[in-house]
Image (tube, rainbow, N blue to C red):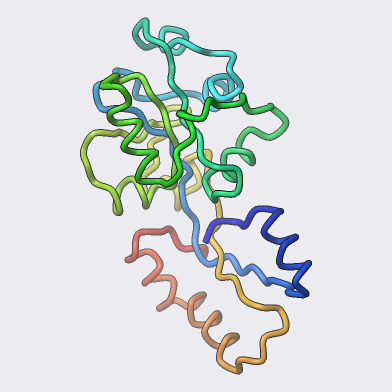
Length: 202
């Protein structure tokens, strides 16, 4: 899973449960637009200004003269947490209710077809947009001119990469957990991580 939200970790702690997070894969955090949108690349600064509400028209980032409809996810979703990490100290604008997509499928659907416009933007993890939902109606943007390909994740050139984790109980009594995690991090396990569609950490 992506890094859990602080609220999830706190909830676990309140239940007397301590979670142990082991990085097992790397994944690109991507922003995507309708395939009819001529914009193919944005800078990290441009994206932050879009989600801060400073940029409201695609013309401001090299596109056509159309309003930007920037979709978000619910507060505790993995992708919303990734957006918050990406934004850093820059405050995220408050979205209207219709601009909050409950599920990732809905995020892609809304970005592809929102009111039949091609001026929406959304975000997710690369695996979801390229492997899980293949509707051909959204396109992942290059960031700073770097496309979110497996090669660019592995070589560290794509600028927004998150770790994915195996989450276990710190005080687990299961005798097989440690061996299983060791296997995931082994050459064979990491080969399967990549074959599944994620970038290995080793």
